[in-house]
Each structure stands twice: as C-alpha cells, then as structure tokens.
Image 1 (cartoon, rainbow, N blue to C red):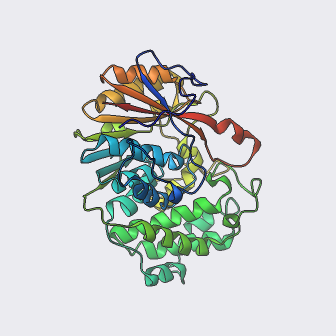
Image 2 (cartoon, rainbow, N blue to C red):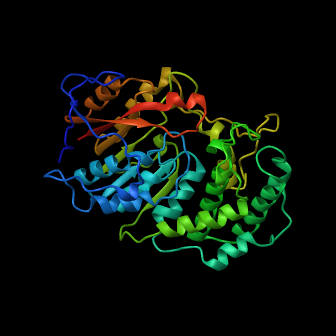
Image 3 (cartoon, rainbow, N blue to C red):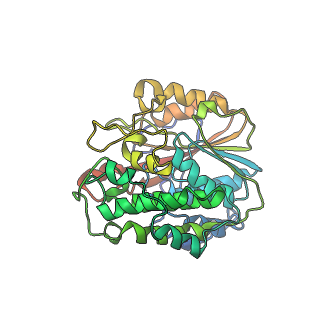
Length: 390
C-alpha cells in the first residue's frame, strides 16, 4: 500500500536527483510531537495496528546517536508492515530503535552492529522477551561496591565526569559482573544510556562543560541516572512471540541467511567532517565491556579507542561497499535509509539497488538531525530517503 502523496510531491528534491523510472513519493515531514501521539493515517492506505506499533516503538529509550532514526519510526513502520514477511535483519542496528520497531511489527529480528554496545542493547530490548531488573537488582547496583576496582576512576579522572560519577561506574560494574543473561544486558544498557545522557551532546569527543545547556540530564548524578534508565528499559520489555537474535559483527562477516526484509542504514560518508562512531562513542563502547579487550589510547586527550577501518567511511570506497552490501542481501526485500547530506548521491543509491532489484520506490522525508544546539548543528538539516526495493 503506497503512502499518500502530499501536495508538492512532484517537486524535485533539494539534494541529489532520482533517476527516471524510480517511483518517488514525498511524505509528510518528520513528526515533532511525541511518537506516542501518532494518529492513524485515514483512508485506504491505513495500516491496521500501525499507531499501536509506533506508540510502542516511541517508548524505546532514546540514545543520542549519530544518524538515529527515532523520528523516522512512523515512516519505517509503514514500510515494514506493507512488506510483510516473518524474518528481518537490521544490519547496522546502532541505537537499536529500528530493531525494536521490527520486533513490534511482529518480525523475527536479527540485530547486528560492528560495535559491542549496540548488540548488548539489542540483547536487552529485542532478544529479551520477559526479563526485567528487579527493584533489588537496581538497589544493589546503586549501592555500595562489591569489590575495590577503580579502573574507570583512574583512567578517566578529570576528563568527562566527576570523581563520584566515575566511582559509581566502577562500583556498578562490580555488581554487573556478577549478573548474567538478559539482566546483565539490561544493566549494561542502562549504564551506557546513563553515561550518554550525562555527557554534553552525548558524544565523547569533547571534555569539560563547553556544551552545557543547562539540561537536567547534565546535572543528574550517574547513580540517579542509572535508576531512571533501568526503569526505561524495563518498561519496553515485552514478549513478541517471535525469537530474535543479536550479533556484533562486520556486516560482510554475517552468516549467509535469507531474510524476508533487510533494513540497511550504513554509516554513509559525509562530504565534510567524518562518520567515525568510535571517535564519538568510544567511552560507551569501552564501558559496555569494562574495557576488556578495548585498551584506551593513553596518548590521547579523551582516552579514545583505536579507530576501526570500514569502507563506509571514505568517499572513494563507500560506493563499492554499498554495492557489495546490496548484492549480499539481494534475495530479500530491502529498505535502505539514506540522508541527502552524505556521499554518494541518491541517484547512485537508486542505481545500485536497480542492479539487483526490479522495483524501487523512493520516499522522501524532510528531517533535521537532533545533534546538539550549537551553531554547527544547523548543517544537520537534511532530506531523508527511504528506498524500498523488491
């Protein structure tokens, strides 16, 4: 069922061109009200149950993450429900919100990301069907330490958080190390989200309070953050009746499998700056495993982790990487997210899909990435494209 076309849909997009023959639809701008208030779209294109799916996905704990698709959830939900099927892969799961949406849509979801902490988040909220952290679990983690570890306090002293906050992270891990299964994943997810919310802009490329905009999150101690974030994750645990899985792997190393739907949101190369997730989220990555096997670079100001090569990061290799990815999953229906402020352009993306697919629909959504209130954030305004290839 196609999305209704709104007035002005025949105007050319402001960035890039869509090759003749592609089916192009401009949809409503990204919703600015809470997703829990998304109404059903009236008329013959309405999808039964769609508002409930969007409302549930809107409860997913928000991690400020580069390229997060939280605000595109209503449009992605419509695409997934129109395609149907049983199995789905979210090949670059990131914040986890799209994997969680796929679960709410009734799919057997496999969530994958090349970083460790997104896979742990998916384990906690997508794979997990019925386990939550009890009040006793949360009280223990927020209580006195179970041992005298101090790696975080020593390594990151004076860089991001207060000594009290750093001591709490060590203490929390002294308890988390004694947990297993989904409780272990939930506790780590809550800890990661606490650190991200406490850090200005949610990224760990800056130190100090240069970007302190007075928000409550930047004042709240990490111990209190954890209790709140754990409650948020508890709230979204539900039994979908479908088995799900989570992996931390390079997309090209995924075991061959035939999925009904594959969602692709790779880290496209920006024309300026970079898309290095390790640089921005190294602290969250290390925190998710207590830096085991993730040695910080001691000669760097931010104690970041070594950068990992990915062909998606560079203009000269990103097109080849996209072609390889699309061909890897050519046997599945593909939903691909792409932003107009990235390389390559939309015509190239559409052309790559047409190399393996007979039908390509392109839906355009005006989108502004919420990535800080600083002046440079203005360049995050973009048009988001959803390519649906069958």
